[in-house]
Length: 156
Image (cartoon, rainbow, N blue to C red):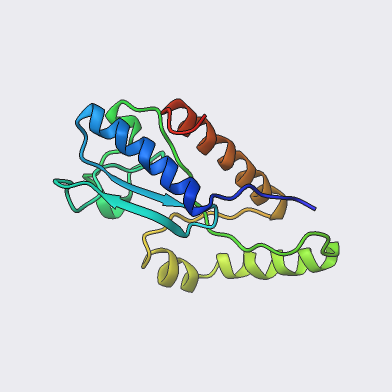
């Protein structure tokens, strides 16, 4: 059985406090948003004087709907965060059950309705991964988040 590290509210508040201290020391007005590994918001803090819109994209490429918003890399920071959506199931499912749901979800992923109604409407990038690839993405993302937070001095 796989186990996952998760952030508690106390963890999120510690990270936010460190981020706020760093931002104040640098003279940055920032919004600090901390999400759990399921993408759920745990903590949000908006500094006075912070603009109301996003000013940078954390992906490799610009988002077509916001073509004037630069990426971190274009702004001189080597930062890319991959945000993902996925379906999870309990460990130990029989291979035929995994194959059934992977096939079903792959067919859904390939429909125009999915692309036009869900992805485009929510300004999401398309992507497909099978269960092994998605599991690797989750673990790789955790390592990137941890390395980035350590590099910023927000966690030890």
